[in-house]
Image (cartoon, rainbow, N blue to C red):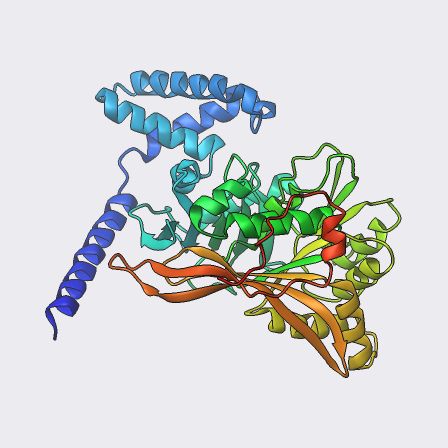
Length: 448
């Protein structure tokens, strides 16, 4: 066995021993009675209407701290200032926060949190996964946190409906799945979003795209071109969609349609629509397709669909082809060409027996630009293609790359190296871009 593998094995064994020791300590919690007494007093004294209101957060924290101090005196327990503060923080997290994961939700460096049952929590920092030494008490403890997340949204999770998509008050996306489907125990995946929405300058500084690409995209948005942001899971599609939407003029009426509302548009005239799951009787579900159909009666200037996954693709394409220019959406795919294939499949999921050529004609006339985003091996996100949909030639949709990212390798720190380049092709919709009055550099499309 190599030295590196031996070191990794020893590290895993030490981590496992530490985790087992932590679990044993956790099960023999000597302060369990004290915590129960504190929780009981909190339920009796604190106005539940204050929960979830940011203005009352400091007042709540102060009241909980007073209850902790009072209970410790009654029990004649003496702790150091650090131990007392740790107790207060624990009670606050359990009462008005989200338990053991609260501190990671507040950590701005953490972009994702993954709870794989009560005894295993991973977080993503700077694009890399790492396990943490925090645990839940048991499956019921995880379930309480899931209920705390989904209940205010009118969602439910139980054996009859063991999966749910939800969101946190700050807009972060949450997916939860519970036994019997999740064999490790209740599982939570949280995709966090920045408290202050990112701007295009942030993406440029992160190396996601260049300033020339950003200017081109801004012109496309203002020219009311229909754009699809495609990419894999975790590639940053929603973040990019948020930034694209910031280019929409303030005097337009924007409708957003999502499964779990997470877009953070900064314009004033925004109407947000969110799908609804079925009730306990299996009735009352309102899906994305229903909302897309209804949105056409709401006089939208722009329709922004968080993600197309099924039959709503047909209604979206028809809307784009009947005067609702400037629509935006995202979709899962590995390349611009793959995005077209997925759109064909999703249109067929609408239940319409349409010939393939008719579907492709709908797609080619509706979609103007595909922005392909990828998550690289080093955890960074790159817009790898900005591709024009040029139309049909016989039975094939013609695509033409305008900008591409050429990956060259990795540096000594393992970071992806490469460069963004124009392909030298000028898009066919240049006349529309000229009418936007967005100043485009003369050499924007020159191949370097």
